[in-house]
Image (cartoon, rainbow, N blue to C red; front, side, top):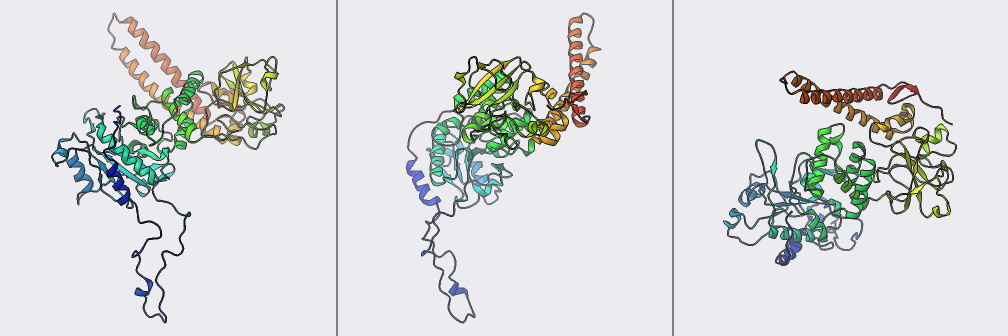
Length: 532
């Protein structure tokens, strides 16, 4: 990634931008509206001119500008000007930052970087197009756009995009311009400094992976994750596996992305992941959700959209009494499951997610043979327990590394009884399916039901893909000549395995769509146990 060079050669230029780009100060607006006295006619008495200065609101208004959007032009300087500022142009931007090494720029008689203001900031430039961010759409209405001359180009055969590096002087000019804009528009928060690819997922790729977002963040422009927080989530996901697609999609939405295109469409979800990677993991933007990508996303959400104490991704930890329906925060780590009250009833199981009588803790299943216990540090002094014991089962505990948040302590209990201790788990498939009961999740836990539906769609898609591959493999088997018995046998085993996974995926899909009343999903013949 191209670093940003130092220097202050453009300071005077951006001081001039400050003076010309802003509107007239409040209290000095004159001549904007014709005096009423000059346009009224037929009135019996003259009307006094509008008073613009005696009374002015000083706090109850703000700027229309909420976002700063970075672009590249994918053209040289001459063609960029033609596209953005000619009489026939259908797109525009507030600013254009040229590349000083571009021959067409030098042909214009310039050698140093000169930033061009193409549209006044008070006007609406046509740079974002169909766009969305942070629950706002049509960002032309509320953003400032900066175009960078950069010859990114798409390969006509492969469809891959070539992203050339940015010029250091160009980046320095862009950095100073962005700092100047942020000083004048405090409503542009760090998460509101975005790329075109962020606000037009799947449609745009600019400013591309070579744009130095991390270096800009270090200069006070835009957002970036804390490395220690990201590593915490890397360790967590290595231990417990990646969270579900539904949960990751929700994190994307919390951070600001428009996730409507990703609902039930694996290819669209991949485009969402790729857009995020172009910004926050530019070393590899293949669109595949991996631990590094998920950890960066969760670290960003924790930093810029922190959950309030008492809420996390599993349950609500309360002060002892049964809480109202537990809150699942969309901004919290994806630890699995929830603990049970001491004497649960059906209603308690479904509405007191994580409350366990007077113990102020939550216990969650982990894997197939252990569970995790979470407790707020200020409430329980765990050092008084010898040995540490689970407040749910009184079984021995052993301390674990901190995995949730600084305000919680984490312990692990081995030999957990998964079926009897779980109300609803949030694990990777297929283990979590054994711990859901259809009536409970559909009637009392719509969030869990939605996750199950998403899981069913994922399994059905995987089953379809595996069936296609299995058919291709079996067709190829008939073409193997004699002497390739080993390859033939390996291919046959692969085909059998694919058939098995595909069958299981379709079976789970069918059971989720048409589960028998009172039977467990994933095991249609086994009745749900009675609550006790």
